[in-house]
Structure formats: C-alpha cells, structure tokens
Image (cartoon, rainbow, N blue to C red; front, side, top):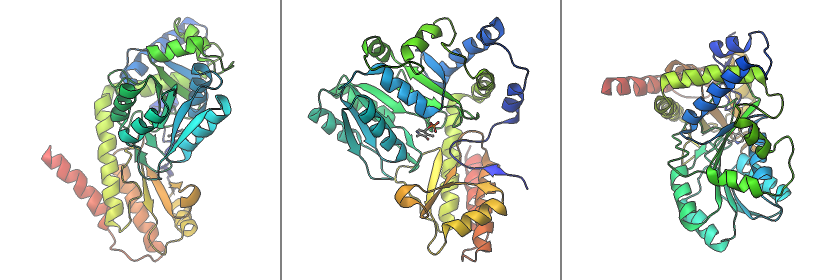
Length: 382
Ligand SMILES: *Cc1c(COP(=O)(O)O)cnc(C)c1O
C-alpha cells in the first residue's frame, strides 16, 4: 500500500531533496559546504522576504524559539505570549522558565488574537520587552494576521515582535522586513518539505541589538555565537550537514515556483480541503483557517479510533489527531509543503472510503466532487 502523510510536520519530502541528501558526506569546514551554506543563507532571505540575517540552527523549531528567548532577554524581562493552542501555550511556559516574567494572553481555541487585544495588553504592560505569537497555530488550524499585529505592536510599544512562523512560513504570505517583524522562526519539517532537524531564525536589526545586551545564559543556542559565525557563512558547531544540503534543494524548488505562487497554492489547496470536508457534512473547527492545516470536527457518531484505524490501515493515510480537550473530537488534515490538487482528491477520497466502511451515512462522491469542482471552476476562471 502506498503511504501518504497528511500531518503538519513532519511533511512529505520530495524525491529530489532525498536524493541530494543521499550524496557522500562532506566536511562542514571545507569550501564545498561553505558555498552551499552561503547560497542557503541568501535563499532563506527570499523565503522570509528580508535583507536581514536568517540563521540556520541544528535543532527543531522549538529550539529555534528557545534560542531567541535565551539570546534576546535578561532575567525579569516582561514577555507577553499569546496562548491560542498547544504551541502558544509552549511559549508561555518557556518565557516563564527563562525570564520568569510572562504575561499570558489566552485566546479561545479556533479563534485568533486581534490587534485590539494586543493593544490593550500593551497599554496595561508598557514595560513589555517582547511579544510572542503564532502565525499559524497548528493545534487549532488557526491563522493570525501578522501584518496587522506587527503594526499594532509597533505603534504602541518598543517590544520585540516575535513570530512563531513554524507552520506559516511557506504557506502564508510573510514579508519580514516590510511588516516590521523582529523575529520569525520556522522548522525544516514543515513548509520546507524537509525532514526534521533544522530551525531557521530570521532576525531584525532591533533583535540583533537586543542580543548584544541580553543577560540570560546560553551556550549551544546562543544567537550571539551563531551571528558571529554567520558573517563568514559558517556555524559555531557541527551543523546537520545533510539537512542543509537538502534545504539547498528545497529552496531551489521554492524559488522555481516563486514564493507568491507557493503561498497561493497553499491558499487554494486549503480552500479545496475545507470545501471537501464541508461537502461530506463535516464542520470546520477554526473561524480563521490556516492555509497549512485544516482541523475538522468528526461527524456525530463517528469514533476517532475506529475512523483513524480504517483511514491508516486500509487507505494508507496519516492525519493528525485533535489535542487536549479536542482529542477524539477533531482531526487535522495537513496540506503544508509538497502537495498538489490530486493530493487533496486523495485525502478527501480516503475520508469517503473510510466513512463508508464504518457505515457513516453520506452521499458517496460528494466530497471528491466538490473538491474537483473547486479546482475546475478556478482553472476555468483563470
Ligand atoms: C511544529 C510546531 C512547533 C514545534 O516545532 P518542533 O520542530 O516540533 O520543535 C512550534 N510551533 C508550531 C506552530 C508548530 O507547528
């Protein structure tokens, strides 16, 4: 059986990326690798739409966010962190551990924070040194308007604007410089079509200035060290050589498609996925849908374990489960990274076969037909 991965990290890895990573090992201090890392550094600027440094760290996305916290702040610094799901919750927890002074802004799961909410918080906490929020909250499939948030924060505060872009980079429009963001982090196993193991961290001049004076201790995750090496297109420690070579390949793919086309593709596929699910009578979870992942409520009377078993064992499809209070109530379909129209037909088709198998009543073909129509109407319109 052909296995198909529809989870929001890890995501499918294209063959050409895997083949590049299968080449004989090279040493990270030789010119051949330096040339690759130099190109990766340049192409990452294109990905984030920035002229400022984007660091490549050997760790997962969480390590990238942790690096920003330990490198930019001092003990006692007030950090506002938005908690609208599992990942937002993680940044609250992390800020509490590191600076010991975190203001948590709770947002209901499935909804996104609004600029007015952050403005109110900043008025109450004018001494905030940083604001952390998530562009695409993967646990709830919810997108936040980063442009509006960044504008609101900058108009009311000097706090560093720190974006968890881990499932947003490569899926949602992101203009790091133009929107005035200070920090944006992603991970290799999400929109970049790579295995897990790298974090990419974009930094503004303001962020770099904060790094120069920050007092929290750090060693492996020190961005001060990483920035020093970055100037010579080098890394302070042995990097994940093979992953960086793979990243060189996936960035070439993104460049060839064009970043704006990549964003549009994610928008189109996510819209079709939502249409297909709704046509099958499933309710959508988020009121501000992410282009990376679509969470849907399991239909009334459908038991998650039985549903997932048929989906996985008989159709080869892996989707993501609901988390925390929504475990067993929702599931999440990813369309982040290496996906196209036919992938959406495959996943919606598999949902239909699964629902049929477990005797859930619906009109066979209605989901696939809705997805196909969505794509066809669009191509006719173009
Ligand atoms: C996956 C994810 C993370 C965590 O990244 P790891 O690579 O698992 O450490 C953080 N934030 C969001 C929004 C994510 O989707």
